[in-house]
Amino acid sequence: MKRPRISNFKHQVFRSTAMQLAKEFLVDDPKALSEKGIDAARIRYEPITQEALNQCYLWGSEAQLYPWEEIPVWKNRDGKAFDLSLWYDQELCGLCFATPKSSTLSIKVVLLEGKPDATHPLKGEVAGLVLIAISRYARMLKLREIEIFEPDPGAVQWYRYLGFDFDDQRRLVIAVNEA
Image 1 (cartoon, rainbow, N blue to C red):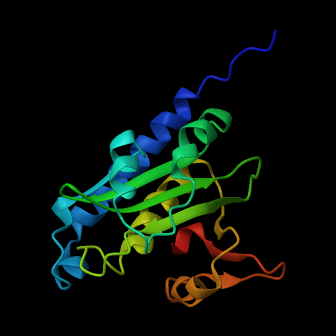
Image 2: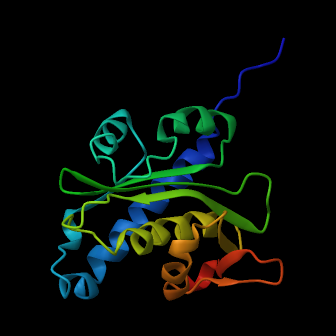
Image 3: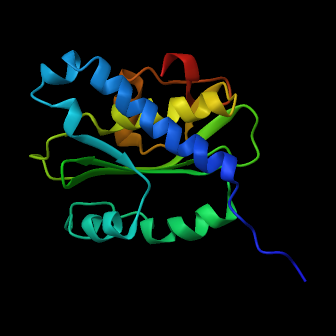
């Protein structure tokens, strides 16, 4: 009989620590965000919970609504997976799922979605804020790069603005130490 997969405690600690370090980074240097009217102390990084799923279903028809409900299943299959919900106070502003799978080189951002409402407080900042946490997690795993898996063509310009570029294999990547 096959043993059930049990999430690796070490990676749970890494995920939690990465989110905490991302938050500390924002609070320690809030100037860039405060110039945009964003209070870094009001930003929360959390795993994707049922509350986050319930909130994203309220985003309306403009949302891509990736298969976020599958995240708990994916996490159980992949102990190194990194899931994140990005909040501003009680408002869900973004969701992300990334995984190194069996790579020793990169972590792949498989899904990333920001709330489509143009008035949400982190509009235009979701990808950058998520990358702060992913880069902390990637460092703990001793990975060298972050890859955007199958990027939406409309988002490539935005990723390039954040420092990503296509490598020789046409993967959209950024070095972990540059993210």
